[in-house]
Amino acid sequence: MNKMTSLNNLLYLCNNIFSIIGVTETWLSDSNQHLIDLPNFKFVCKNRHDKVGGGVGIFIHNSLKYIVRDDLNINSFHFESLIIEIFLLMVLIFKYLILY
Image (cartoon, rainbow, N blue to C red; front, side, top):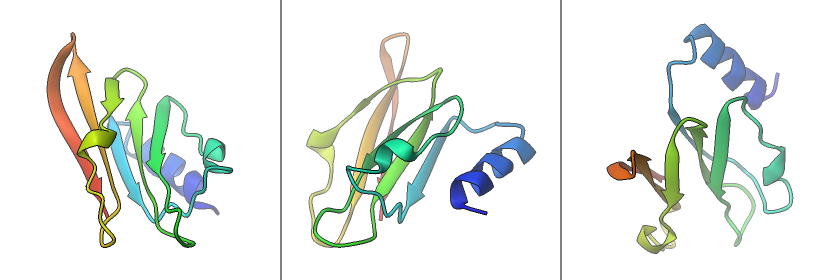
């Protein structure tokens, strides 16, 4: 069973109560990130380009409005990061950081 199937099963068992799901070690590249699909979620990611492995991603429920904040990402040899801002009625309600 691949990890996407496992994640789908976990969400089903939890009655889909999550709105944002962060993942690390995605091992994605620009050429295959489009293969990631989770019903009712959008997926944004930051792939590792300097070697194989790594990468971070965030599944965001379709009901949420968000923007990716590349300008706030931590650019470091030691970290991979992805930051999004979530909005409700055009008002920023929180920032979400995934760091690996």
